[in-house]
Image (cartoon, rainbow, N blue to C red; front, top):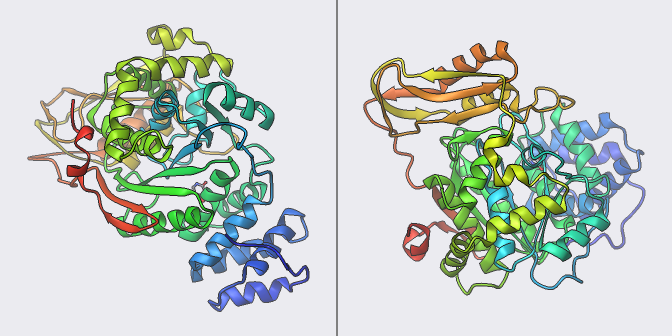
Amino acid sequence: MPTTENSVSNYNIVSLIRKKREGENLTKDEINYLIEAYTRDELPDYQMSAFLMAVFLKGMNDDEASALAYAMLHSGKVMDLSSIPGIKVDKHSTGGVGDKLSLILAPMVAAAGVPVPMISGRGLGHTGGTLDKLESIPGFDVNLNLDRYVEVIAKHGIVFIGQTEDIAPADKRLYALRDVTATVECIPLIASSIMSKKLAEGIDALVLDVKHGTGAFIQETSGALQLARRLVDIGSQFDKNTVAFLTGMNQPLGNKIGNWLEVEESIECLRGDWPDDVREVTLLLAGSMIHQGGKADSLDEGIRKAIQTIEDGSALQKFREIVIEQSGDVSVIDRPETYTKASYSADFTAAEDGVVSRINAYLVGMASLELGAGRKEKSESVDPVAGIVLHHKMGAKVKKGETIATLYTNKEAQLETAIKLMNEAYELGGEAVDYGPLITHIVDKTGERPFDYSKVPALKSR
Ligand code: URA
């Protein structure tokens, strides 16, 4: 693990920026100094911006990325959950469209006896965020303080909160700066940012869902693999059992996109009514967490235990329990059909006969954002009922005029733009593009390898 011992407190900031600009590697102490000075407001945004751009252009090696994660982690509180029995495991996804998996797998894993402390984020660009989805449940409070965070995880084995001011504050400020200086899409910066927050939660182990494909932030498989390696490497350096899976985001996950719509689909899944793709990736990640949490001897056994929590109703019960604990209205979980409806809806229909050959997930995410499910500006609020229900996905045969998707919004004027985006997103042709298996690689501390479905028969069993 990186150490800050012997840190020198008087570096010349311009020389550090120049050093990185010339492609040299910074030491742990130098990185720590930069982050400490920035957190104390002794280093202005313009110098930090120059440093970030130098990192963006010249990169960072594994040691530098770990040192950056360490410095950001220690800019705030690091939670200690050692008083709570069990191996605490969380999950992080690099973000996708229709990705509601946290809502489903956290109660499954907790019901299997593995505590899941989850600090999540809000929607970012075309992708949704767990906090926005949870807040679509009337009354659900994600703003628990850290004492309550520990109390709730101790009581229920599950908790959902947002990043507080105390959790990796340097990352919070740096992320906002990266957003306005075109330095977001940088693998070492992304990896250290994600891991600083996850490590602050007090976890013992972590599973990572690294997306690639049209709806992912990093679309190329090679880039996603590089990110996965970096994330696992940082986790391992901090002695956390970290496993990453590369999963496809070449079409939205599941059939519902939008905040409440995704909660609704999660409830359906918790009741055992799954879209195939959501089932496959959720079971994989939940199974891995149960295995990493010491409640199963193999990934396959973890998956079987995850399935059991659906079949015996304990996962749904756990979800109800946490909704009640965090002040949410459980009546909408029990009767989702009573939830407020959007004022306007419109059908997106097929322009011709054909097979849905391709769906650009990014454009579907943008259509959902236009309807009100996401934010164009950070200060905007999201509309819980806005979103899209997909009736047909890749491989489906459709007839001219048939409804492919239904769009929901409270902003009628946005329907036209959203329908246009859906038209661009959907391609009809003779057959569907073959993107290969949904799960492509596994990366852990022993290295990376293609995912072998034959080793996990439980994944495809029904
Ligand atoms: N999510 C994060 O938390 N940080 C990044 O840099 C990108 C995505």
